[in-house]
Amino acid sequence: MNLDSLSRRDVLNSAVGGLGAVALTELLGRTSLLADEPRAEFHGGMHHRAKVRRVIQLFMNGGASQMDLFDYKPVLFQKAGEKFDPGQGMHVEAATSAPGNILKPPFDFHQHGECGRWVSDQLPHLAMHVDRLAFCMAMQSKTNVHGPGSYLMNTGFLLPGFPCLGAWISYGLGSLTDNLPTFVVLPDTRGLPYNQKGDFSPGFLSATHQGTILNTTSSEPIADLQRPKSAQFITPEADRDGRSLLQKMNRNHLESNEGDSRLEARIRAYELAAKMQLSAPEAFDLGSESEATQTAYGLNEKPTEEFGKRCLLARRLIERGVRFVQVWSGAGGASKNWDNHTSIVKELPPMCLSTDRPIAALLSDLAQRGLLEDTLVLWNTEFGRMPFSQGSEGRDHNGGTFVGWMAGAGVKPGVAYGESDPWSWRAARDVTTTYDFHATVLHLLGIDHERLTVRHNGANRRLTDVHGHVVHEVLS
Image (tube, rainbow, N blue to C red; front, side, top):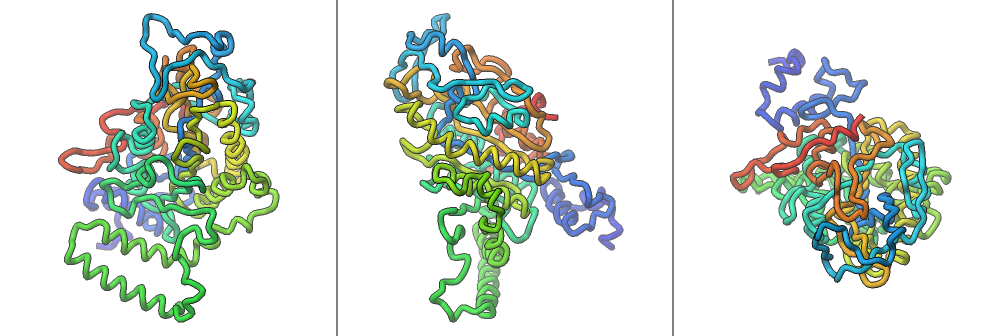
């Protein structure tokens, strides 16, 4: 059969169903064999036309305090120092401490943009972009514990062993380039988050779909990509011959161990590494950016240098075909993250200072380059904080309500969906669960979250488990 004569429907119907059809469509689309689908216009997606081609997720590790950043509550100022009593005999407790008195935000709030969004003065640069953002003001988690909360926000489950959002996207939509990974993780330079690599795990999917972790503090962000300087005997010819032999041995081993996805993933990793030896150094070269761009991201100032590098690298990676990039702020542990148990007034400002300017620069940069037309930017955290004090001026964990936002392709700018109670203690109206958030992101990528499933241990597993609905109120 002549492949060129096949219609789009013929191609899809002849594939081996489900994701096989999608993978074939992706392959043929990249090689321009689907002649009846114009290459000049982006369609994408699995189940419907996509509005988003690639995603950058900014993850604030530790539980960013919603009432000190975006969720302005006058009652916290009016009744500061009083006993917290939400009324109606509701029981009040905290995750790691005894509930204290009402703690007002130690920072001023002002309204910004045409939408009038209240933002803390700790985020002056991001505040200038509120008319680009769609806020989910009543997000809710099932837990007040970091590990399960982070798993839930990343994988849709409280326990380890399940694929994360980036892995599902890689599995469902495949790669946009042959020379760089599909899913890249840029962790905080101070260390990995609470679940270590579990938050970027492929779970029961093939290891091919796991996040590729880059160390942005190293002169070689990906270890062993190039030969050691001392190994002069490794020439391009010898390297090529070695890879050929290794590939042959791996293929023979795979034939005798059919079904072992780790072997196939290893083979693909070696093949990708060989291609990245040429493409990655250019992608990682932030010095090629203009001085104005480096300054905008804060690369020349100590507080913003590290997170700014990761934000700029995220833009360079998605620009070169990486489909999903996750940028982390804050490592696991009791300090130097968004887990501000001891002192909001001392611990929150450094985190805001390190991220505010780079995130604003990223949004401006993406917009100026036209990348926001098919790129989605997400800002997330695993849960929020309590309206009452822990100790004298800290806040404990709160899964009852927190804030997330998105911007870019397919997003309605300047809107806010949902509302917490007057204290920012619990979500009160139009709640957004983690499942809803994931369903909405997948929808923008052209994926029906109920149809992206994998049979595992007798169940049809999906990112949203058996829950979730698309939050159409934040979509354009």
